[in-house]
Length: 135
Ligand code: THU
Image 1 (tube, rainbow, N blue to C red):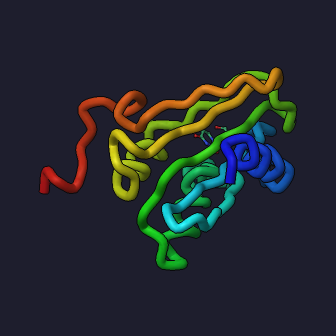
Image 2 (tube, rainbow, N blue to C red):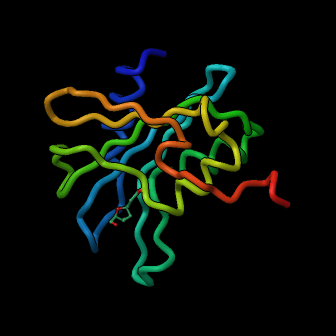
């Protein structure tokens, strides 16, 4: 699975987003270390706080199927499903990533409409994180 393929899967997932309130579509594609890919889209709710992000849908799908060793995640999104700019993950999703992804090795892939790709380590986007080693 190339980075570009993972990004394309994330972009494709924005079509599945259930977003009647924000109209902001997000798709995610998570690559596990054994090569399995799990995808997710954001799913909103009339009780707004119950909304779940695309990244967490992908990660929770993976964990529920027995995969807890994550390698990278591609995230794509945009207003009304139109992808223009990079779509970085929210803080809650970053925190969930720390549970199953290595701080240095786990990578977050973002791409814009021009096909430019940015890659970050988890440590870069969530420095000074609270992880399970603290407990
Ligand atoms: N959203 C995600 O799916 N992932 C993020 O990391 C940021 C926000 C969703 C939640 C909500 O459905 C919409 O984008 C607007 O916040």
